[in-house]
Length: 547
Image (cartoon, rainbow, N blue to C red; front, side, top):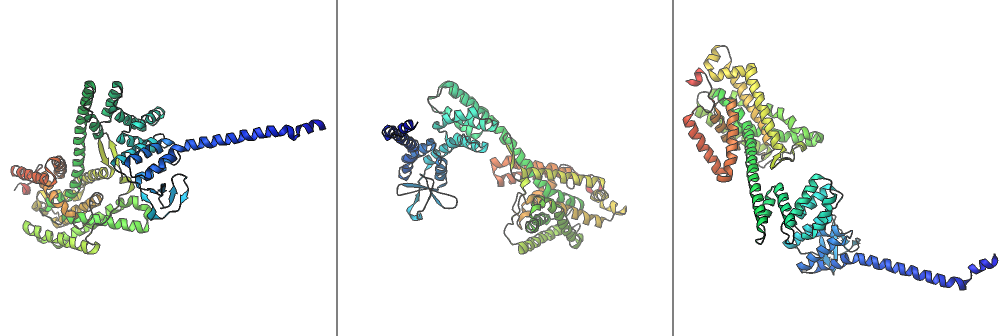
């Protein structure tokens, strides 16, 4: 046993084995180092090219970095896109959000003076290369939103080098929206790829036809002149189909804009329809009731921001009744202190209320200042709903719904309440209503307050889509009178139809005549219409009205 042990521990036997083992270990270490150096080579070799003043070198560096698979590749390309990739002394550095420098080769923090570094120069060609590289780097991301944005970037860049990555991304994609975007990006590349087969190009044309937007139309209309006739014909038919679809969605979008504008005009005019119809008063201060409602909303939001920020989402619901009370109270004061002495004298009421509008504007300008005031939009009113080719913003949808609710409420008040009965009686025959015991002066004050209060609530809605300033009401007063006269004085249904008609007609005229000329055309049209029907679309019935 001792001899055997001695034989095992004999240096003359052990030394050759240990030498060979050490040689083997050193060889493995050397091979691993060479493999590591080889794998890091493309990335490290590409970085110095960013320091060159040649755009061609920068573009080749982008391609090499993006295809290297290095852990810092995405950060380098993103830094180049944002102007945060700096070079100096043949070294490349990334400036992070905090302003610190990171060595692009090692990923370690780096100390350097700002004057010794300069950003990498870019032009449109470099920007397209950056966009393509970002798409290539993020097409296989684990985040669906990142993959979707990458697919859109590739669609814009149409970089042929991303085709292989696109094929892999499409094969493994499970999200329907992302997969469609990837297929559209693939189609955009294949359509202009000279060596792509006819089958692939026809499939790309069908994919772009299904996309059906302006970008797809541009691609289909810009085929190279040497494209085969069958591909050209298929692209022409697809482009014609997209043009038809875009024309339909454009008309539908204009119709929605018209309805949205009509709902705004309805809110501004419906209160005027009550006061003008009941008392025959040309109230030029009606727009200022709208302004008071908007400023009430501003004050409510300022108080909520200061004392109860958690209630900001409900700020508009809090402002609505307060705006009604503020504007309604001011309206009753105006009727009691000024209007009641001027009944039957239209010119005097026009001048008096115009003077009151100037006084109210100046009062608000003195209290709040002449500049616009910021009224925030609650989170539930932010964003848009996409329906086909329509974009329906949530704030506009809310205003349309609100206008319908206000209109329906006023209809119920005018038909099923004693106030509504009295207002209708005074509107149709003031003398007869007075002889039946109705206090017409009290009805006048309440009707004026009701109309002004509704205008105040309109100001709450308008604060979400217009500038809150002392001149806010002046933007709607002329349109409001046009709607009331066109629809029929004192008739709520006429006001509704007049507001929607003018809103839709205005939006369809704007693309051809412009905003100002379009309004002039509408004004002339209404004047001609009133010449034929002086009482508007829906004339009220009654002895006093008829005489």
